[in-house]
Amino acid sequence: MTYMRNEPEDLAVGDYELEERQALRRVAGLSTELEDITEVEYRQLRLERVVLVGVWAGGTALEAENSLQELKLLAETAGSQVLEGLIQRRDRPDPATYIGSGKAIELRDIVAAGGADTVICDGELTPGQLRQLEEIVKVKVIDRTALILDIFAQHAKSREGKAQVELAQLQYLLPRLRGWGGNLSRQVGGRAAGGVGIGGRGPGETKIELDRRRIRERMAKLRRQIKEMSTARQTMRHRRQAREVPAVAIAGYTNAGKSSLLNRLTGAGVLVEDALFATLDPTVRKARTPEGRLFTLADTVGFVRHLPHQLVEAFRSTLEEVADADLILHVVDGSHPDPESQIAAVREVLAEIEGARDIPEIVVVNKADAADPVVLTRLTMKERHSVVVSARTGAGMGELMSVIERELPRLDHEVRLLVPYDRGDLIARAHSEGEVLSLEHTGDGTILHARVFADLYAELDRVAKPVETV
Image (cartoon, rainbow, N blue to C red; front, side):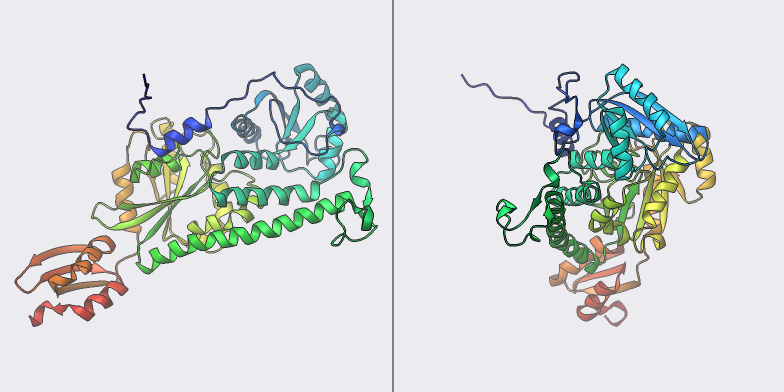
């Protein structure tokens, strides 16, 4: 007897991706941790029981707590169990141990009492700070940048996305590469190089120098691969530009609801998860305004405060979707405790993308169903060019589409021409690329009254006849 599994017929692609992501879960407390971290040469980032540490060097106490709360969400997204979060008030981070030697000893006692195996610092630490803090607390120490890179490595699915994440990880690793024990300090070269031979720098090259050179070679190879893979993206983008289809890019803070908004507007069915950086690979879909005008909608990678510059550099080809857009939908989480800081962080990253600063922007305040009405009023007062929506319930979507239609580039030419019946393709292009005002079928052809872009106008002018001369 054969048994068949009944699959739900209404599951979208994103539902299957979410099911696959949640199919394998970590079980806390079933790992064996080395007592001496110097016993390993390379350690895969594995988070289980963690303690968070932040330095409050400026701003209000609420801002410091919100930053540590975001670090907690990042840690949980990476698959860890957060035991405790600590904030230290300092004028600036300690250049040696980030939190100071005395506080580092207190942190060691807290780690030992809670049985934690990892400390995560809310900032980007220098190689020296990581090493010295690790020597004091006796467990693995990572910073905010390494944590974000690990999440990106878990969620990247496409070949281009994986290459971009690997490049960012190697850029981060290169200045922090060091040896544990005496293994990496051995000199190699010539016959003693253990197979390296030609290409080594001779008897003066150490093992760690050889590793650095291999990392640089790998980074150069990844840059070439990303450049080659971005060619296909550029080809598709140029094809859309040649047809003069307006492009709208969705940008915003991570977990603000960008993918949910894309699904609501286009039915794309991309993965949606209540987690930071749930989707990394950009998705482009077609959509139409209420008047029937065609445009493309592109979902981009989410931003975050202090987004590692390595990621901005590695994902530059992906972020070009924003730079080449005619309009940016800046999605904001209206239910967040401090949405203004999210807006500022996103605009800071957009400022690093060449050309993005000059593109018109609509602030889309999402999650209106869960937001405080006072916060929504405050946001709409500060951001005059804004729309309040809920991607979950669909509220405000009609107003958003009307605003998009109003902000899209204007069509250059209004035509009233007699198009022969054998050129129905031009009528179809007028529907898909322009704005058809009226159609009238006659014995000689179709009278088209429409607003169109320059390239379609030139084609119509070549084959059609003005109505007045008929």
